[in-house]
Amino acid sequence: MKKKSLIIIALLACQIIYSQQKKIEIKYERKKDNSIVFSYKKNVPGSYYLTVKFPRLENSFSSKTYNKVAKYAAGTLFTLKPRDREKGIAFSYNFKYIIGNPNPKINTKISYALPFKEGKSVKIIEANYLGEKYFGNNKPIDWKSFIISSKEPETVYSMRRGVVVEIVNEYQNDTKFNNSFTSKRNSIKVEHNDGTYAIYSGFDKNEIFVKLGQNIYPHTTLGKLSKFDESTYRLSFNVFHYLKNLLDDKKTTLKNRIHKTKYLNPTFYVDNTTKKIEHGKEYIVSFNEEIKLQEFSKREKRKYKKTPEKFQ
Image (cartoon, rainbow, N blue to C red; front, side):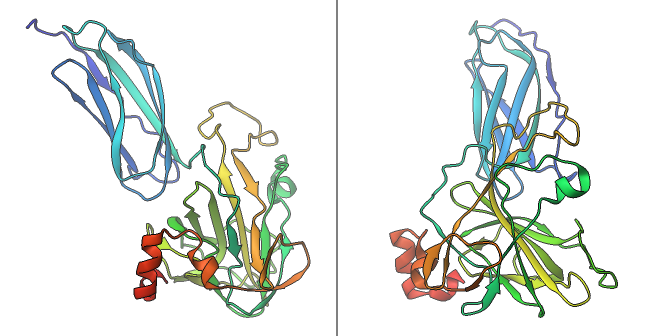
């Protein structure tokens, strides 16, 4: 076989979002037929949207750009195939990624549980879009976020089944001042099975009860609230999914920044019925086994009947 003159420049210039840790690693393997199989290893939980580009690609009719949602711990991305099977492929590549699934298959039949103890009466307030008020951003047309305030450090519960994909546990709130706005709040992000997400914000430092990568279920205890000001504890929460422009590099002004998420207005199980919640109204937190098991398979339901403590 002819000696192959191959120049392979692996530009592992990852644009790692939110952390300097390598969240995703890419490797490739050259096959005997001179094709090259690319695969990934994911070191963090949750779905990540990945783009691989080839600034240089010789002796191949393959695409120069590949997009992939990496859901699992590892997997195959794509295969480069040579035009001339007797010669190797010369290439250079780079890749970037960000948390999120821009192609969700949203389950509109899901009923969410309010994130507090069953039987508790809560008043729901729809939050203003603070990006518009404080930073001049355009408000998303579909903006929807909720606030529940309390005089006590209530325990927060999950609204739906999912996986914990991000935890912020670094802020100790200063209650000497009455806060009207602060972005420094401890939070939990949960990815649901259908590619939607929920964010819960307002936890006390070191009072988060779940771990990164943990599977949670409706009404799993997440943590305890921190004081928002001198007299109030506050939970902020919303449900959303990512859009297809997740890795869009277009430069925009702060005011005209492109929104990369779509906010949802879920149906909640409250007052022993399912309904959309309304601004300023009070509701009784309801919960039952049907809500608990609505995303369980038949096999999981059988396991739950035998060992319900494993699904807390």
